[in-house]
Length: 144
Image (cartoon, rainbow, N blue to C red):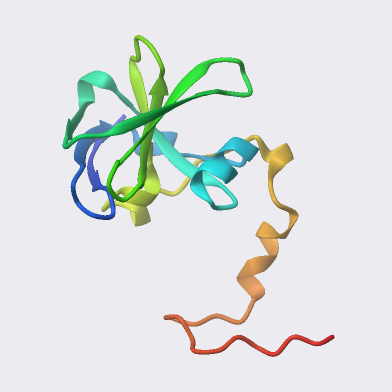
């Protein structure tokens, strides 16, 4: 198993981190908590052991009860609110790093989908939508 060194930061740059991960353990979570907490249809993450994770900068935590009943700390930047990682609320041995804030995100294709029963039905249909390499000034007119 070849481990990969990754690094990431929050949007404003106040919080930065490094980790060593197994790139074959990236997963996409479709649970409703991840949808709400990320503001997106899914959240991609990868686990790193505490020993293989380092953080600089001040963070805040929001403790939630997961659907499994476990208490999970959602860790984010207090300045720009970027979600960075999650971990057990007490005695954490791993962190689940949010792929979206990693420099290496394009290399980290999920190997597993979890909580698919909550997946949004339209997710598989967006590849065929009209696309732009940057934001367009307009959207196509809607009928009706």
